[in-house]
Image (cartoon, rainbow, N blue to C red; front, top):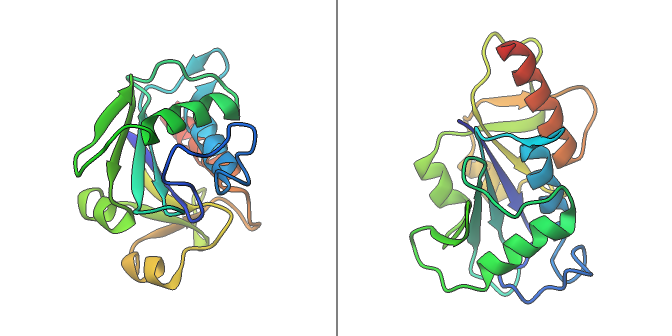
Length: 189
């Protein structure tokens, strides 16, 4: 199973955002929706061996985590609005400390990065990390950030974690996922 966790620093933690304004009212929810699409979509198929965790840290709080499971997800189309609608629905249901399913393959719970890191070992995707093409082996779980760098507090949580880079230039989070999955596909072929 391949896992991606994306920190959405401004991402809304309630379903009150507008599907017509993902960048504004959703707190750059558009960035997270593109990460969902990059994690799962192939040409005419979905990656069933992927999970994507969206760590929502914006208003009104508290932090929530939305999980998409490729083996179970339904009603997901390759556009940002489709992903956003599934996130919006997940955020509209009451949630607690355990993941609760909102639609097939989409789950939500309270809690953020520190909780997820205590449960799953992640490597960090960072421009200063080891080049994925030079690495002898690649882990299956990766943490990355939205359009903001990890905060000092988040950086402290992942201090000492292995870090990897997809190349010499800084890429958007969704492009980083695409490049990484391409490298993993080539190694598995």
